[in-house]
Length: 422
Image 1 (cartoon, rainbow, N blue to C red):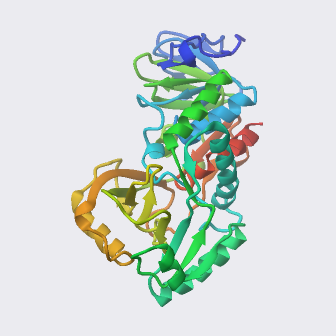
Image 2 (image 1 turned 180 degrees about the vertical axis):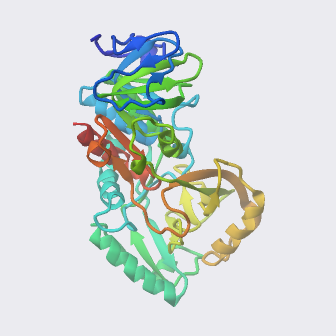
Image 3 (image 1 turned 180 degrees about the horizontal axis):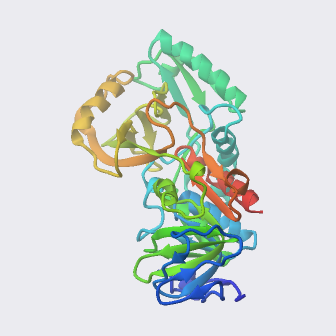
């Protein structure tokens, strides 16, 4: 068998398309004009599985990650630093163009998730790792803290439940009376609040640059404009048909599906992947409005949670600009448009706790989309980090439903993926 690729042979290990640094794979089956025939041993044969179309050369990869968002880059970095030869395939023209660049850029404490869930465990573990990483790698961040506020007695009782829930997740919160909160948040109408000292904000793009840099330092590579169109798993290998400017077929020993919104759709035509392990996915769009000019806030402000999200909250960027969002809107297809008319709903929600809001200063900013594994009526769902123990396919980890707190959890998710591929 031919050796797998040690690293890319191009500038800073990165490039576009399959032929930027891959070496041809060794013999595995029979190549012909019409396609690539899978070996008889270790694979169930069917009419669909007998041929795999080859558009160019068959190329060999040791470890491949699909998706160059913050989670995909964190996973690839961790695997490369463990001694693996790693390639990241990204369908877009840049890394981090999807979920990773369309969120609140908040480092979450881990308040809301059910005890012992993956979201709870990975958020708390990941938050600690992320602060250390930002500090050691000079990634911009600020541990600014967050207020979760109530505006009536019924919501006060909800705060007490949230505090107990957070304590079970080893997340410290302080319950503060309305008058004391009002002194910290001038102009805010509040009956009580929870103070979260561990919540912060960060420069997500700077984080992804740092992750990519360490991936490349460890010999890993990023391929842009490289959408994966089809996957087939058989025996100890996976075959990927990659489109783009230089289409090719890849033979992969270890595969991580970190494609974000595209992770679930990839499974629909995945040959050799168990039908019962293919999840359903729903899309929840959240719109953000920025607030122009000065404001009185130094901390993040969240109302009590609403179904599907954490309510229309106030976040800050590292320059201090305020933005509000996201709201929650269930959609049928990927669509990042922002309807300026939604400002009315934003203003009504914000004025419940900040009567001094000047509506004319709210400007449409951007939208993000969360991959949900349950619909609006389905309630909580956990991250799915499915390895061979879950689906029975060797050398494969699928990441499904990686929404918030995926950014906070990215380094912890990477460690879990590494263990599942061990």
